[in-house]
Image (cartoon, rainbow, N blue to C red; front, side, top):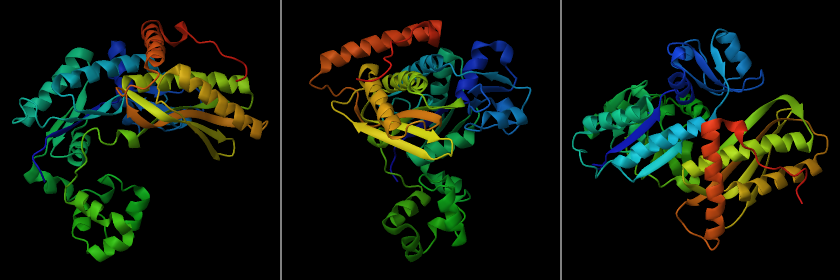
Length: 386
């Protein structure tokens, strides 16, 4: 392993913490942010709510059953985007090498940053900068690579700091379940357990022929992870990522006007996230779920890459119209829109002037929403795409 210093910064219960910060009377109370209807899902739960077993992505009806006395709040995406921009501006004060994973989570490469010789002190400075600017708590993990840094931040929650030097990496990793490693999910974990591999240490010492049989050509990669080796660089995985927004309806929908209204709001939120993360996608994805829980997707590739509403919304609307034409009167319980295949936001295309004009319009809309709320400004909507 090399002498890199990588940080993983993860805000604690981000949406709920923003609400508790903006409404001090909610401090110490269980706060749950998400869809306010019975069919919605939890987007964030404060640590007070988590004590009752409430978790992100849990159906709202289950959250209300587990914690009926919690304060339930709707999502205020413009406010969270505003806080995210402040957090990422703090990161930029330390290093330009930033890989945003979401509004509230990022990797930082601190290898060449002044003060990197004292990682705990540098981590405290990052935490203090975020708290001074936003009033919010962050957990910071520091290590020689992305794998170790992320596990360290998870171990330090909430509002903690953990530095794992190279000589302590194996002590951290060995007792962990194999599912703690990047790329090994619950299903793979069960498969490994059936073959006598439960912990990272057992994976590290497993015979190569067994791993070859289990993982194929990925065997060496996973054994390297078990040894605490991770060569991924900060920012290198941007093109492999995806960003999406979705909503579950209070009642099933089938008509274009209602679905398009929901999709338009989601597309606006998606565009705002892409702008804050400085991402321009080449691909837009429409996600639908019918009442029998079957998942349907449609996608459209385009060039040049663009994150503006003026480009993405007509594409999303067209995909929806085409799907409905093929599935008339089909009831839907969920709709979502996503973007992937990203190019760097500073790669200028042939249509830069028109793109910048659209981006200025979107940025102005962001400012209005952040100050006056999401309903203060809306865009026109045609009843059908041409």
